[in-house]
Amino acid sequence: MILRGLHLLWSCVFATAAALGQDANELQNRLAAGKTAYERQDYNTAERIFRGVLATTPQAFVPNEFLGLTLSSKGNPRGATRYFRAAVNLDPRSAVAHVNLGTNLAQLREDASAESEFRKALKIDPRDYQANNNLGQLLLRRGKAADGLQYLETAQQLRPGEYSNSYDLAVAELAVGRLREAEARIKSMLAKTPQGELHGLLGKVYEKQGKYELAVRELETAARLDPNEDSIFEYGAEFLRHGTPEPAVQTMQQGVRLFPRSWKLHVGLGLALNQNEEPDGAAQELCAAVDLAPSDPRTYSFLASVNPSPGEAMKASLLRFERYANQQPRNAQALYYYALYLWSNAGGADPAAKVENLLRRALELQPNLAKAHLQLGIAYSRQSKDALAGREYGLAIENDPTLALAHFRLGELLVRTGQSESGKRELEIWKALRDEQKKREEGERARLLQFIYSPASKPDATP
View 1 (tube, rainbow, N blue to C red):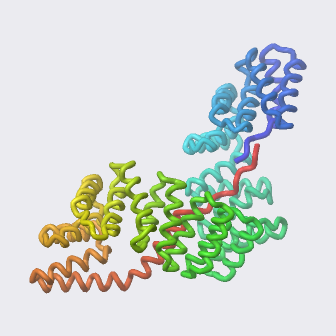
View 2: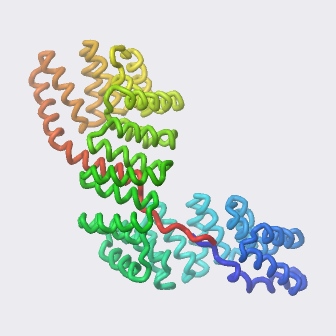
View 3: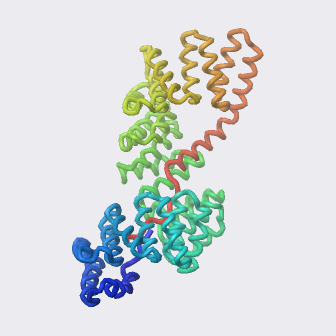
């Protein structure tokens, strides 16, 4: 989102001087010097000048607005807020002031307050380009593409062909399923500006349209023209979406070499290696991703889906899960993952007591955690505690009827304990669920990829 420029406020200078009973020329000269310093990006000088003006005229609209712009440009949006708010309070009928405050709040991720300011600006001037564009951008970022579309379209009518707005509008059209409009818009933009990000966005449109080969071509072009984390990840992810892991591995490996501290590329490579039946390599990459973002819960869920062989990769994974559980002792998922990997890495040891304790603690925190009930049932079965095992399998099914392994374990237990008919019914359910497993796994793979990367609007220009 872009802040409104200083020149749009310049007409207020004389009115400010007159209202304060000051010499207009003197005030104009001081503000002109600040404006010149701002425009040549000498923000320290601009800040000094505007603070000097405010020292003698603290209730003046223009220097408050100017100082807010200067501090924002210096990368201090938190400090700028005070002055943008002061400007709005001094002139609540200024659409410019509301737009700049809204943009500032959006930068601070105070989205609800930002939306309110943009809407106030539009009440004052419904044809304000920046208010329409920034509100549309904000709603798109908040996952409300359908709501944001009308404002982006209005902005497009006000400034046809504006690149940033056109890009955001195409993203919104893609999000709401207006694929033909998005495709036509992007192709028109490419004819004028052959940017890598436009090829990437067109690739996503083709993917939605089911045109896999065209999607790959466009995403490859994007990664070649503009090799950044997002473009390389999206190119590799396209192979993963369609079950072709080898080129996905090659693409993600190239990305990791270029961006060794990229969380998403390490995750992408881990998922690609796992799909390519290389679980040890997958675990190593996901452990690297954990180390880059140790508090991000997503990485642990990816790592938990990998089954490395006993050895270094297994030990490395267990170490991460142990650390996660110790750091977040009231996180049910963290305790569950640690228990799961303790069993996997047991070797000749018997960690049953520790595993049971972890699973019970997880279920105390989250009683509906179906997989924890399943694992606790398996732990009881290994100790021949059939009644306790049967209860846990039942609770697992109650909380997640699609959990195939729970039906299988319960079915086996019932048959073994003389309840053949009930056991056979559970085993039939298991078979039906097993047949659906491939479809569910494909859907889960797509969900994971979307979880790592969601299309965002065009990055903001520097004010």
